[in-house]
Amino acid sequence: MTPTTYASFVTAVSGLTITGVTRKYAYPPQSIGTADLPASFPLIPAGGDQPIIFNQGGNLGHVMRMDFVIAYEPTAQNTNQPNFTNTVTMMDSATTALRAMTRPTQGAFSWTMRQGIVTIGNVEYWAVIVSLEGNG
Image 1: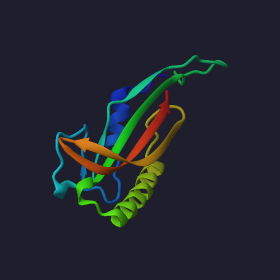
Image 2: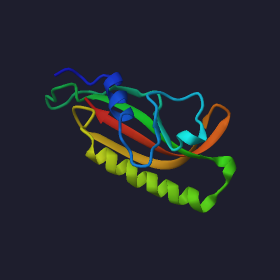
Image 3: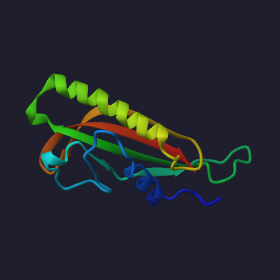
């Protein structure tokens, strides 16, 4: 079995259709216009190989990790209650999309998410950051 490539992993996750996201980028954007918010994009992946044990086939010892960002409002707008609501809504929407997608790796696939701040250009944005991990 051929191992999953980083390119196919990033492409699969970047292609997610998440309710509420206005613009999907296949790479980290240099800037985002407010008309394009909320916007999603991947960050550079990481990974490595782990020892294969118990005759595990299919390169399932290969681990890939990636952060996927959904930026939704400049922090300078400083609207606390809507930021909280937007974060929870985006987390629910991202979870729904991730559960519905075809698994992007051959083995286990999992994720965690949190609120964070990302800088795009010179602008800070409130964001949901989804950390994904897959095997194979």
